[in-house]
Picture 1 (cartoon, rainbow, N blue to C red):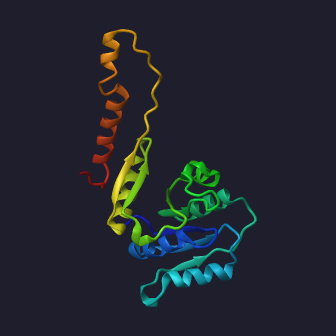
Picture 2: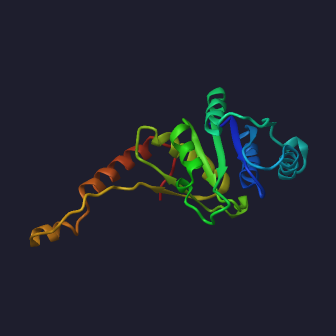
Length: 211
């Protein structure tokens, strides 16, 4: 049973990649799609893009709600939406003005990650829904990880995509002074062992399948 009953799509400018991803996801999850303008595009332009993304037949289209522009800070506004609607997935895209930018290199995306208590789906600025074959899920292996993994499993089922989990281990620089020290550097580190055990335990609590 999909856990998302509300999708919040942040729309900044053409080609409206988040919108093109959000419509088929809203259909798949039978969710209400909220569209929040965040950039220079006019409301009429976004409405036209939404209609184009939905297409026909009308009976197959999800419920939609186009939010009016707001003067309050974006992060606060998104937080209010998420708080008011449980089971929300927020969909946004990468910046268009700097080429292929890692999502967390963009200040707005980083602020969303740090402030929202829900899953955030970041898509490429020119991403085509039919082209998605892999989903990258960064994780800190916290107690919330199973929820994130379940979200990944649901998205993967819609896209028929593989899921890559990424956990970064911070290591302290180590100087090998003796042959024994050098030998120890060739083995798997203790933090890596711990991370693998933690990941295995969290996967057991989620619906994400592994291969």
